[in-house]
Image (cartoon, rainbow, N blue to C red; front, side):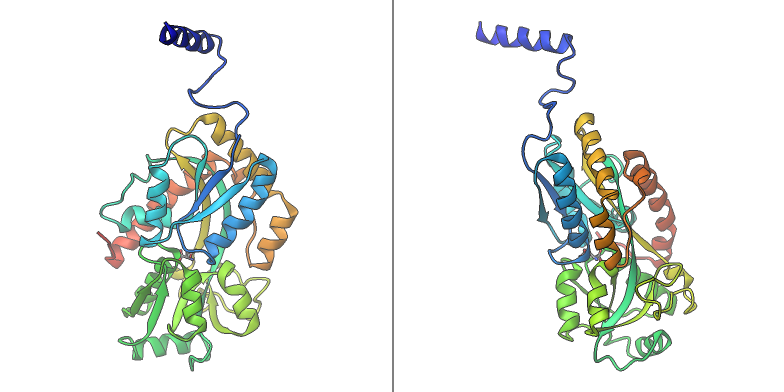
Length: 327
Ligand code: ASP
């Protein structure tokens, strides 16, 4: 009898349109949300995520807790979210690697275009080609000569196959037609520690991880991957100026939820993201790190979906030409 009553109750509520998705509370969010960052703590994706999580939390009235799930170039963390409960309480903040991994990996623990809902775009971050402080190389041309002459011993740090640092390193090696020794980390936070300690030679990484070190003179910078020079680094040339336009790349970041997350939750998250994109504190913190928040109109599911699809199409032939795959 109790079961029958419960079933009848559910039918009445559904018929009255009181609940639009089972198990979804209209006053979402009613508890803290986990934001998975698919790289180690202390790196650039983590830095962006923590700033964004703090700002979005204010609008949502609930805390967003960042969880770092590094490894396999971001695919482990993305897989974690793809398989999480689709209840609006687990989100993923990932970058361009979401698109490149779709081609780089023969097998992924998720289907990139069908495993997620889209919340919106967050930011587009330039990269910098940097080296340990005591590398005896003056400029980008010198770096190319050095790398070509010492290819069997020059070490390039990255955050695994699928990471932005992997993509940029791959573009560099393709441009100079010389493979170098790659050293994978769970994120470029720990890779930066080794670059500072002189255990690895070079890295290409987002300004959100390299700005302070470049400004402090603790690492050397040779080029930026943006189309124009950066306001914070007027003296660092672009890769195009150095004759390598193919290395031009922007590391766009987006927020995703698992497929099947209630529409209402996704819309609420998008709204909070749009508030964050207009948050002056975010704008000034991002500016100090060489980037900008995405325009508010791009903090939408449609903008992120379109970006992901176009970027998969853009990078597929480049990756295939470089012949780089992971199993
Ligand atoms: N910058 C890293 C990358 O190469 C990721 C990170 O540690 O945030 O994708």
